[in-house]
Image (cartoon, rainbow, N blue to C red; front, side, top):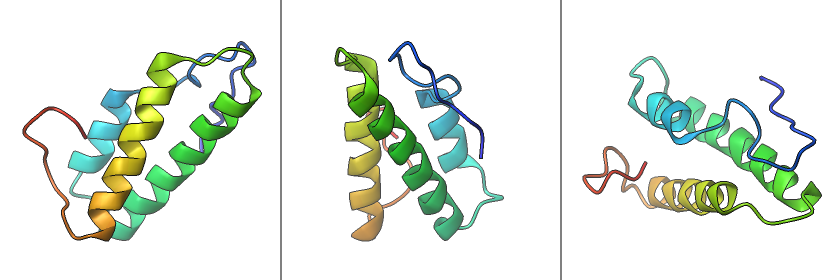
Amino acid sequence: MKDHKDKSGEVPRGIDRQEIQQLLADSGYSGGQREDRLKEILTELTQAEADAQHPDPERSGLIREIRSTLDRQAKGQVEDQPDGKF
């Protein structure tokens, strides 16, 4: 797993919507692998949020969207989202 820690309190480097969308679109990952990686990213972002002195709207948005994606996967509502969200 990449180390995405960023002491500035910003969104950890290397974690962005594009990385997450690529992960979800890559057919080389099983559903379980995708879920595990999303959980890793969520943990990293949540830790960065807790360590930050000020909330970051981009990071907070990614956290909400990842949680929503994991919830949809748990309910069996996976795959592409037409509204552009992952």
